Structure formats: structure tokens, C-alpha cells
Length: 60
Image (tube, rainbow, N blue to C red; front, side):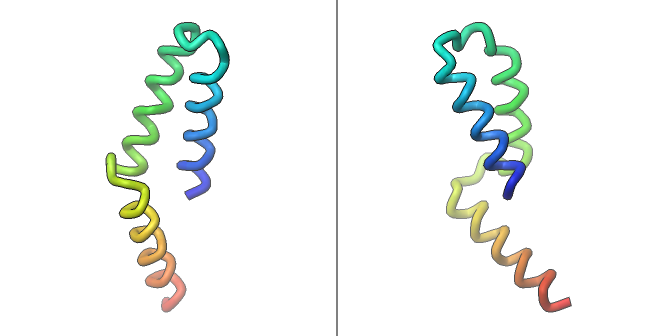
């Protein structure tokens, strides 16, 4: 979850930098990483999956 939040912050920072074209390649790489982590699912689905996994790990 922290990786997702971190990458989202990087992407937003690059978009709001005032020079979005300067960071286009880096933003593409970060977006690709985010899509790999989230499997392009909605935030609600990703969060529910994280909760399920957490509960599963906790029971072990």
C-alpha cells in the first residue's frame, strides 16, 4: 500500500511541476509501475484486496 501511495505522489508531483513535458518519460515509467501494482483495478478493489490479504496473514 505504501508503494502505491508513494508512486501516486511522484506522479502528481510531476504533473503539477509546471513542466509536465520535462517528466513525460519518468511519469510513464511511474504510471506503468503503478498499473503493475494495482492491476488497473479501482482503488476500492485494491483496498479490499489488501484488507483480505492482511486478515489472511494475521490468522497464520
